[in-house]
Image (cartoon, rainbow, N blue to C red; front, side, top):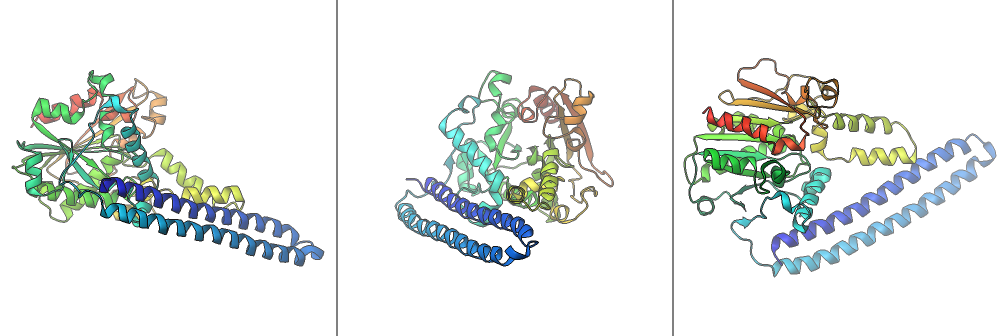
Length: 427
């Protein structure tokens, strides 16, 4: 069995054990909320106050005992299965230098590998921060995909994967709850070829090498931004040729991660920001996403109601990943998710020599239609995807709106590609 497969199985097993522990905590929370509701009534009745309190104490001891037993058995099973997986991992094949990736095609969305990959993206979006803290094998550590290989950023390995290096490189960063496969969605419907992506088109039309980023979308955007900045620096240093034209393309959350990477790369004096010519943000929630705002408001409301159902629901909602929480205000650097004011001007630095393209969409064919203005592309409204709030703009900006386009369609829509191609042709 391959080491990577064992790591995934170990991660899945650990997540199941964590879910059992979390469920017992929710049961305990529900019992205590019910108890408070009952004793609030019995405490007002003098003859039954003390007997009711005594019964509740007995109930609490018994419940805690049962739940403690469940937790103990859960941990014992975890120890035994970990030992078995440790043995399997020691016998596994050593990891390859460059790992071959499954082809990105829109006609594989019903296959087992695609479903497994999609599930991995969803799990990381929901609890990715938890996976990272627990060193869980399901954590999608940031990786770069080049020519259908996940590559370690080592010069000799990268040289084998890229035998004919281009001087022009475009880096594509996917959004929440997905992986790099999202860039080929609807490829066959739009282009008549299930393997077509913006990257493959740019490679054929403009000699651009496409690089796809794969990452854990449940982590803080600012953490992913720092890590992407570091990976890009390593990539530039290990690249087998010279790069004089670097572009970044981010969809949805990926647009925020790209802006975050630009901020930290520039602030830390890295080399790669000087090579960036274009930054594309496709449907990125720079000023927050409605569903993320609703989730935050609902959590705060339910936490104020002391009933079993509301307390349990609030606890579950509060456990949503830090990456999802960042979408409430479009936070891209630490200072933006730490502060209390969600409407403050963005503190993130932009690259002064790069041109920024903020792309929006609406479900309605007419972008100015009232419904289109209200719901945007279904997940992000136009004012948010049109760019962050700046005190002053000292860089080139281009904003574009497309009507009749859904949020996910921005990743492979022919009209959006035409804009990308025109931007590269202007170089």
